Amino acid sequence: MKKIALFVVLFAMMAGSVKAQWFDFSNNIRASIGLNLGCVGYQFHPQGARLDKEYAGFGVGACLSVGGVYLDFIYQNPEHRHAKVEPNQSDWNDHTALTINAGYQIPVLSWLFVTPLVGYSNETTGLTKAYDVTAEDNSIVHKYVREHIYHHFNYGLGLTSRPLQWVEIGAVATTHAIYGNISFSMGSF
Image (cartoon, rainbow, N blue to C red; front, side):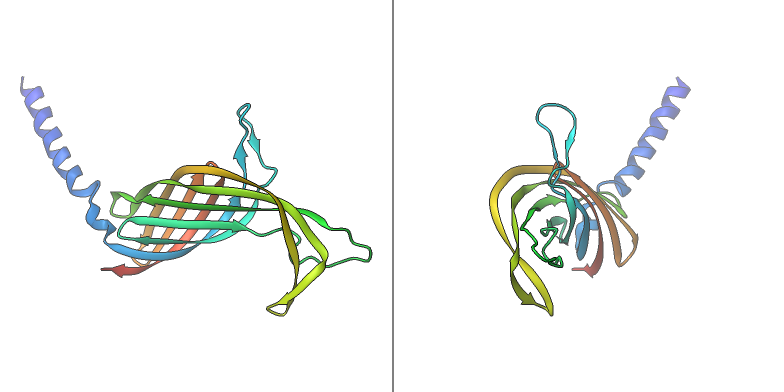
């Protein structure tokens, strides 16, 4: 009987200490802005467990967190957007990909946040025109003509760690993108 009483007391003390640390939503009273880098445009193949990487490529984006509400996007440009044109160059078959997500950061510990995400994703296919160019920012940019667009519901999970007071490092895995981010905290409000 003494062992059961001791176990109940220790369990109550442990539960009390856990409440003080886990799921403390006062940790969400902060704001941060950051940069996303990673792979965007893949999808799980509907007929089986294989990954369809036909439209996957490197993407760049941004993320924002205010009061625990998390928003981000990541975009992949056409591969040949800035390519050098060879003599008698034909148009390039290219694609783009975009993912936009929203979620709420759940503070597991004061320095660790889990973020369930939902959002939108698309991939486009088209042609990058070899000889239809414009000049932007002192470089030549080829025109991309979209032929098809594929829309998707996107969902996944993010994990954010705050190793320093002003820096947050995160990783996001969704059904159409996987990427990392680094954010800079603008402090509490």
